[in-house]
Image (cartoon, rainbow, N blue to C red; front, side, top):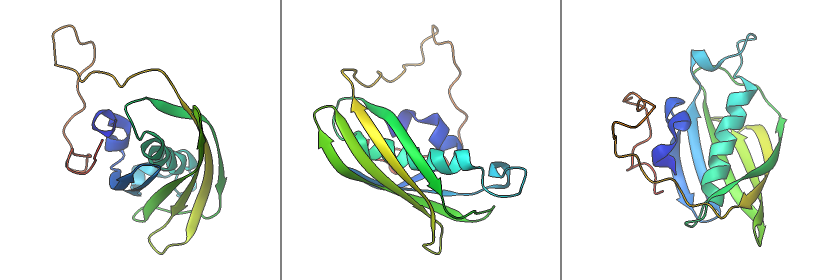
Amino acid sequence: MMQRDQASAMLGMVVEHDAPGESRVSMTVREDMLNGFAITHGGLVFTLADTAFAIACNEDERVTVAGGADITFLKSTTAGQTLTATAARRARSGRTGLYDIRVTDETGDLVAEVRGRSITTDRRPPVPSTGSATSTTDPAPERDDALTTTEVSR
């Protein structure tokens, strides 16, 4: 999944831990991630948490997606700080799951908490593109800070 996640790669996210039902993902806040008040845009804090959530709930060959999520922002951050989202499964029954995600800064202070609800679908992951002439999108540009297959296990 993460090998095809261009959004997380573009934001410089790094997968630090990936195991069934849990994950840890970090991201350094850049100047272009700040809102008009010079603090980290809340949508990007949520995006980091959502990526950790996605990794934690996709633990087999079935595609699992978010059915919903709620976020509580507790502390603002700014450029140069490193945020880490840690996701943990709380329950899984049938096709649904419940996950808690904590976002902390580099000092360990709590920045946000997310409660995510997952739904496992009947879909299979997309087949990797072969770069055929019928492709309608250009591949993402290479970046030094992008995720690599050695940084992710899925």
